[in-house]
Amino acid sequence: MPSDRSIVALGQNPSWGHWEQHVFYVHPGTKLDVPIAINLTEPFELHVGAGSCLSLCDRGHEWVCYIEQEARLCHLGIAEKAHFILEEHAALIHKNVLQEPRLDTSEIQIDLMQPEACVDWGDGICLRKTENYRQSLKIEHFAPRTHSECCLKSILYDQGHLNFTCDVFIHENAAQSTAHQKNLNHILSSQGQVTALPRLHIFNKAIEASHGTATQPIPEETLFYLQSRGLSLQQAEQLYLESFFQDFYANPLRTDGE
Image 1: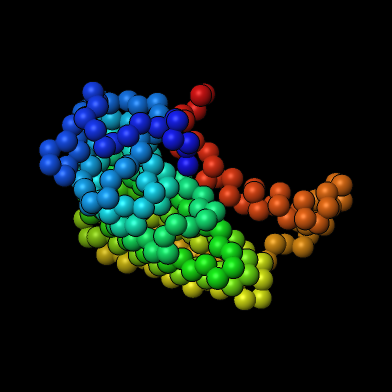
Image 2: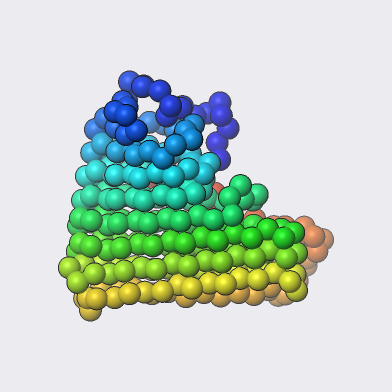
């Protein structure tokens, strides 16, 4: 999550958008280099104008987001309850590592309403002591040539408990769509627990889809290799766990060559 000095607030009328009651409209074609912070307590709607490109920092809110044609939204942080609706060629990118969850529940729904809409959703979650976290993710493909990628990774210490449900629906009109979901977990204690339910609901045969989940301790051969290079056991474990979340630390708005 970026520091407060590197973000701009959504709670006012800036030059790139405006409020109409509880709805905020981002002007079409807006390109912002810094993330936008949400500083609201009530549920609201966000409309990302066509051709816009921006990122949004969420510290736990309830909201609905419409992403218009060829717009691109990067979602940082974690939403308590969020509903994303994507139009043609719209893109939603979510990359986040949650070290100390401020919420114990997150419910996300993503609707790919028009062709070429796509979502790339990636979460890394670290749970310690008796922390419990439940994430429910629902992705619906309503149009042809829509695409979804979903990956949740977790590291559980002590009595941490993760409950993860991911339902992906590919409806009858969503031919030539792709949907891939994956859940990978490392449990580092005898009392950690993962309950994972990745599910596909497919109503069109002309698609590509996959899902799966895996849970294991840190591979001993990996720790042995790192220690053979001069690292202590603790350093080897820390390096491995940092690399496990590496994909979620990258800047999703960067393009090749930047």
